[in-house]
Amino acid sequence: MTPLPASRTGQLALDLSSAPDYRAEAFAVSESNAAALAIVNRWPSWRQGHLLLIGPPASGKTHLAEMWRTRAQARRVDARALSDALSGLEPDAAVLVEDCDRGVDEDGLFHLLNRTAGETGATALLTARRAPGEWPVALPDLASRLAAAETAVLHEPDDALLRQVMEKLFRDRRTPLSAGVLEYLLARMERSVAFARLLVETLDRAALARKKPVTRSLARDALSALLTDEAAAVADDG
Image (tube, rainbow, N blue to C red):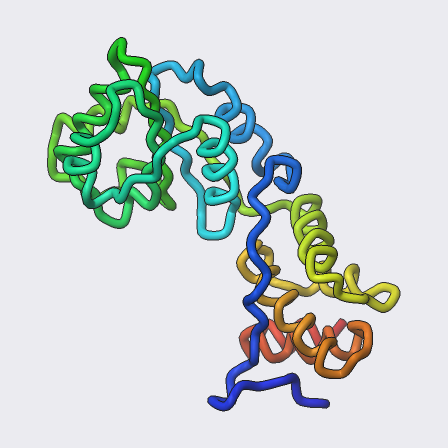
């Protein structure tokens, strides 16, 4: 097996120079995210003026949140510094607060939800990996508000979405593929967008180093390097 390009530390060398494309037309839609997309796109007609966007890592939360932020001309606010940030915002400001399940200014978030539920025209999109019932919230009134909030849920990608994501990642990097490589990867890879990104970065780097298209052999080597030993053995059986 020909070794993949490695850094000085011996780890796989990844090309992280490609900037994410958060345009609306770049958002890959499938059954796993269509319902959440529709709810987010109902803005500014959310029932309570605020919306919770819940989904696992790399499920498209950041992309969808950035689409909304651009459309709403929203301000991104640190979840842990909400009180200070809100004091400097217009009463009708649109606000994006990300990763709320990783720690949040509870008093500030409670005031934000009150503001958006009022008549000021303020709106807020909150993102998190977990449902609000699993957040470490101590303030009872805030927990009650969060439990009653309108929620949009992103799920792990289905096969249709994963194919779209892989095609887009390879296209964005202009990575040449030999015939059948994409199908080979889709049949054996971990079912997550995060892994898809890592896999494409690894293959693109290797293809550039060799100045050749990504072949099935190179794809097999990349999977063996990135998957666990058990998963790699299953992949090699194919």
